Length: 155
Image (tube, rainbow, N blue to C red; front, side, top):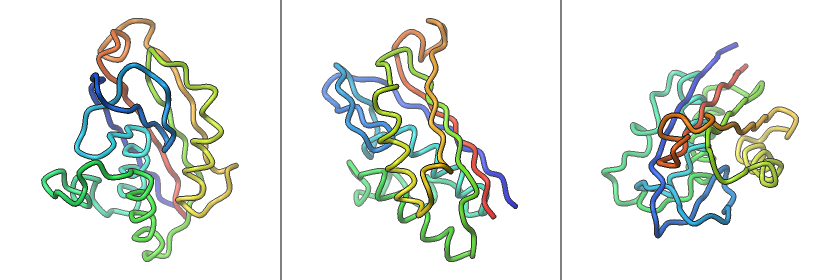
């Protein structure tokens, strides 16, 4: 068994769509980044790559490469999972926590779980997505950004 941890954070800005877990969420701001800036998926990718000793998301999908400009992070997750499978590894489970003061994410969590399960060729029961706030503290609490942590178990 292999355990991996991933973390990502992006700044909230005007003029971008908010994409989390591959779901477009209605909100007045979106996340700034080279790709679609989906912090949730980026944390998942880093946890998987870390568990498989395949580096990190920046190494596999560098932001200096124009091919990844505005890239759909779910497609990047699928590509990363191909590398995981090539090593003979399968998903045990993935547990994700999104830290965001706003918007409320509960209505979108089931679809996020479905998206990740599909991309990683596993059952939805193996994917957990939770959301929390930091009670107004820190950059997520003051609505400057959103962050996510992911932990995975590969077998």
